[in-house]
Image 1: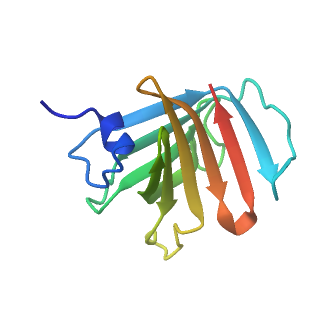
Image 2: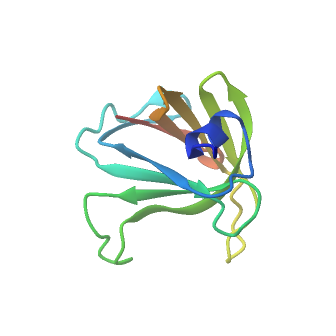
Image 3: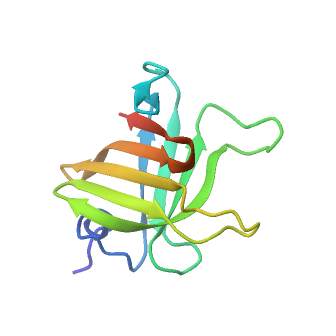
Length: 141
């Protein structure tokens, strides 16, 4: 019997056979240098997609979409371009992923990371870390 995609994450397996999982959120809080700088941002609809690495490398690809509409210049709803990440730790039901490698233009993924809280087989909360900016955004259901 094959594993669910969530099981790959919980087990810290950086080589999933295939699949993806998504997390849709309508609220987030932004932290700068550990301080809440935004309060809740209700009705800001976003969707994270975590999938097997789209370049067939180790780990996963994490992409964030804006569900509130198409960007007028980019003509798509990508909020955060796909980032190559791998699991660096699992503590009970919290998975930490960290970016690695580079995009096609040579920009590093190492400044990005996520913490994923899983409860009852579903993503309950996700924290996006932008390490070079000392910024974290906590996305809530």
